[in-house]
Length: 123
Image (cartoon, rainbow, N blue to C red; front, side, top):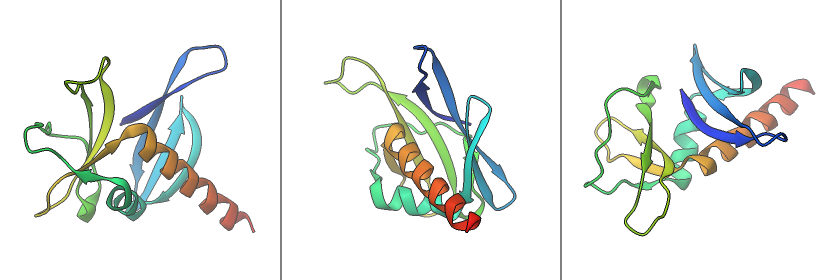
């Protein structure tokens, strides 16, 4: 699932994707492996930074299944006061209200955790 975009040195946009492989979440930038971390890390990041989603915002079906954690959905939302739409990630959790946060913030936090996990595993 595409969770964000990154501007490359040549000015082009490259997708940042998140995939599930067993019990691991795998981050990639334009088909290049960034890192991986436990699926639960997505829940931790969204609980830390996410805010309750406004009930007037419709959450589409589908998204990325995260097992018992729930599912992660990407939405592009244009608020009344914005000029351009923003990308948001929404964690839809069983029996709880959805949490939403700007995709760029969630991706940055997940990249940081994946990098820290990789460094810890190397030592």
